[in-house]
Image 1 (cartoon, rainbow, N blue to C red):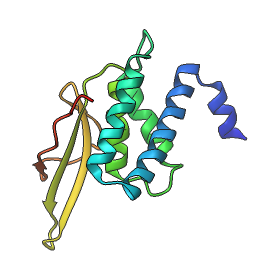
Image 2 (cartoon, one colour):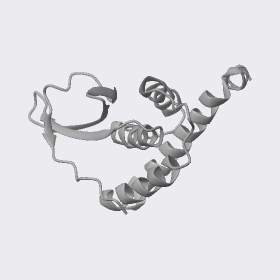
Image 3 (tube, one colour):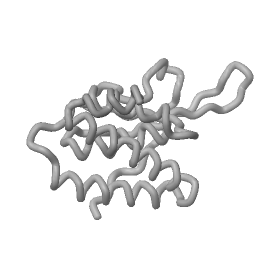
Image 4 (cartoon, helix red, strand yellow):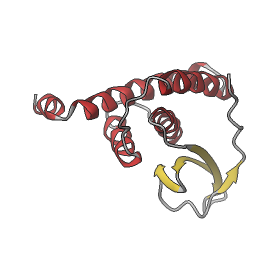
Length: 146
């Protein structure tokens, strides 16, 4: 009940942002399970293009988008850095901010391959930060306009 009260006491913009974030995280989680990555990226591009035209006059900041992703990630089971980064990319683009998905790989001290995803906007890491210097960037496919 306390969480519901806190949610309802938020400004309407933040409530909408949290709802968008939880829906996106769920859709992306399911999409990664059912679809090829490139197919999912194409669908997400369509979502962000369609919604960009309907955006508000006063967009949410990248920091507020990161906050929404962090908050709702606690409530969606199985959310990974890739799911968070993809959701952040869509939300940032919908709000009129440039966004770039980054995927990197590194070897841990046992020689096992590790991967990490993050999203950047305006040259800053918005979602998925940490020690990124040890990761070698993989090339990410260029966005296609559909």
